[in-house]
Length: 214
Length: 242
Image 1 (cartoon, one colour):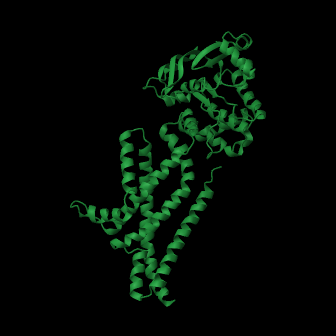
Image 2: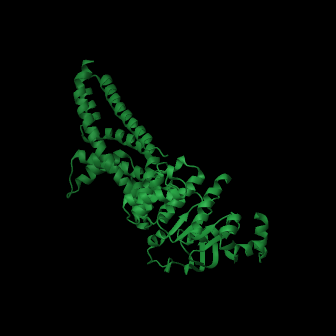
Image 3: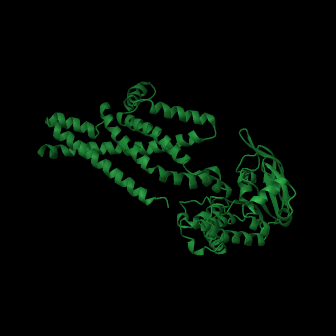
């Protein structure tokens, strides 16, 4: 028990880093996903292609390769430089963004065409129709899948320890090798991840009930 | 005064030509009922009148604006043309009042209090004052359709289009909706109604258009068209539905 109590402050510090990266990255990822989804549905072909290429490229490559490409690859270019935390946030955001784009696109397309027609027939513009009629309904429908992707992204942040970010997983590694108590430490780390993800899914089901389609 | 002028209107979906050559003039305060078998193009015709369907050929002029002209602001034209759908298409995430006030507030920039006041007046008119705060999911089909009519009227349209407004309703709900439409006709609203309600067409219509195969086959005053149809196809259709 002492091992865990002693390690806990370090682990919680790591958790702080994990949550910091996750929250910023998931918000950026969502905005990116929304933009990509709208581009995918835009009448302009060139926008469709850009979005499609982005989505396919991200979905078709492993997370670790994306992380290495951004942290080692892009960072090695002479005119650009960022630290590991920034690289981690960018990677998680881009990765989640591609998946969010497809979730949002499917959500928008699942709304009955009659909704847009009714909105247009009372004189709303395309943008107003999207904003007041389509997106609010689509978001309610997307919430479960958005939660799912967010949980996956949260777990993906554990891979960031590889580039030296002192997240929960990295702190676990340090504590495990310092204490020689790998079993207890990794069990504790697992429990902490589990609690956070459980709280996240509680929040999601609260939101689902809150915004239930009437 | 002619408020809707349709000239050589054509509409195709891919290779399928749904409207072949439609010509029609609709006068102010006129109630025109469009009847015909399924697939005759009557709903498509109606939907072309506010360009919910892109028009393939010919022209449609609404209050003097040629809506096939790409320069015309279609949103402005639509503000003057109310539309009521078979499937109601109420916004499920908004209350009845919000459904009605959305257009006036967002498209006409009406202030909120005024829009809400107007919404309550319109709800009273369609007999649903007590449902102002309800969500569409809590209403029956007939109530939904009456809210949809109030929503369209909130824009103060010059013309109302009805696309089979009673076809999705339980029989006992049809009467309430038709009653509201009759009232509207009496007040002098210009109306184009695609309908299977022959009783309504006969009683309320100033003119009945019979469509089949993408053409207007015959049009006349209801008493004439129902009592003394001239074309074989009209006779065949009426013998099945009357």
